[in-house]
Length: 261
Ligand SMILES: Cc1cc2nc3c(=O)[nH]c(=O)nc-3n(C[C@H](O)[C@H](O)[C@H](O)COP(=O)(O)OP(=O)(O)OC[C@H]3O[C@@H](n4cnc5c(N)ncnc54)[C@H](O)[C@@H]3O)c2cc1C
Image (cartoon, rainbow, N blue to C red; front, top):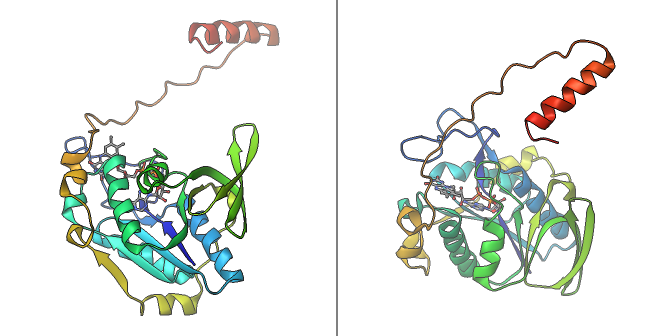
């Protein structure tokens, strides 16, 4: 049985800078990490593998060549095989084009019971790629998975809501997107780090995938970043003076003025 995990390499910061001219992410000088939600997705796949050694955990990423080191991290956590789709043809892809490329890679890997992705990447922050891949592969999806169990071909998940959760039963194959409450990702072990550098990283270009070049990359993307800017800092704080009653009255006026209440 195969489980495919979608993992993205992201800048280790929540304040992603974007080149105002090209609209692309500025990656220089920012350390890169495995996207946190994807670490939860991988951990869940590895937990299933801990109990069933017949499971193969395959990780797939789309990204520039330097994403390979993130895949080695996934191997050092316990993944069995890793795939990277990397080609200039994919550059500038929005979420639609990204999910086209990843769905094509997943089709090529094939024979999967689940696909796990993170709920959201901390750089693009859209939470769209997982559901879009499911659409393109024509399989069901459950997002915001905070708990998970498997019984034969039936998956029971708790789907996180703002004020609780819902329990959903679904048949495999299925796309699940993980939130951080799902588990605590394991650390890499020293032995596994050494082994990770002996394993192959399969690298596919656009020619290796059964995909039309008109559905990937910047030109194919239905959306464009027209402008990007850093939000201006908030103004100075104001200390309210007077009695408690005065302060409350002034606060109410200010909040009404700002349309907060
Ligand atoms: C309008 C628009 C225009 C864009 N233009 C550009 C651009 O010109 N250049 C540029 O560099 N970026 C661009 N991006 C960013 C790019 O689209 C995203 O990095 C990418 O589509 C993933 O979306 P996300 O980061 O929001 O991921 P999310 O949808 O938040 O990710 C959810 C999950 O999907 C999986 N996933 C997402 N991306 C990948 C991946 N690459 N490999 C493996 N798994 C993945 C992960 O499991 C992740 O946790 C653009 C985004 C938008 C919205």
